[in-house]
Image (cartoon, rainbow, N blue to C red):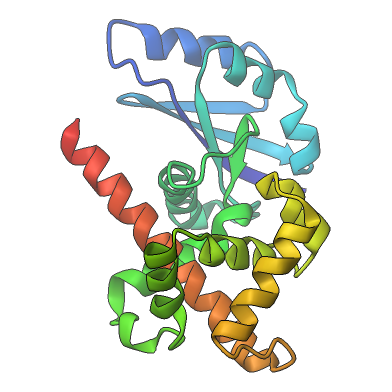
Length: 223
């Protein structure tokens, strides 16, 4: 057990709406300590148990009912580290915009690897370090109107499971199997080479994050 910080975005910096939401949340439990921050509420939850319990709690139901977004830090014991965990909750709020979470409450632990990738994209020249076939596969897709890149990425994201990839992409298993064999043949990929496979998958994830960040930046400029 410990405490977590929850950053709740109500999106209405008008009148007393934030105060109303805060009071509604406070009425749910005496363990909730709330601070209002413009169009956010910062909520300290003491005696935190686990994600499953929080996702099925009255607080999660309230988040859904009022169409709020809620982002949670990791659990912690020392209140002197509050600033570290506030930043985690804040980062989760940003990251859930890149990959929308279907759960009422998003947890930093589920976005930690994405946060790392975002930092890598921000601070280093990653382009020259990508796997050499990455752009070749994308170019092939453009020229031949295929989806080898997306299929391969989905396949790797699903632990090389044909069944899970076909379900995720709404494709027949034979179609997925054909595409995977096709991309291996065209670009001489050896999935038994674990270092090379890791490099390939990691490179694809970096490109995905870069595209998501670019999309988010464009949407922010249009607001």
